[in-house]
Length: 131
Image (cartoon, rainbow, N blue to C red):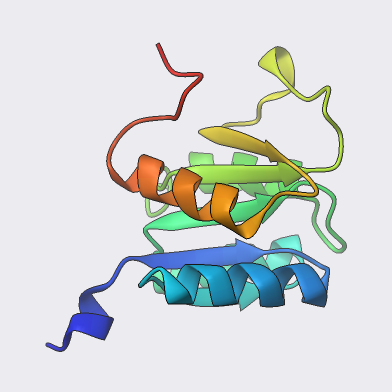
């Protein structure tokens, strides 16, 4: 097995191609393998098929929104263990609004901040807001 195939797999689910492009390049440069999806249903399908190490999920998505996609990932035995980073343009998402994500980043989110959050989740912590 080569080093690339053993690198953690990150699934980016975002309907904006430019956002996916920026995040894919940043995560790839940091040594991660990356898969992409452009809507919530495609994200679910890829998560069930690929079983990524981390999912980065935009909350406002076509076909199936990120809220429901996260709920379904958490209900499924194959994916309930996968850490999820939620991305949103709404800074007021918290507490009871959480459908099961492990971390929340507000857009616009720098590629460095996303890469650092993925690294933190893979290390087994939930980031600076964790107790």
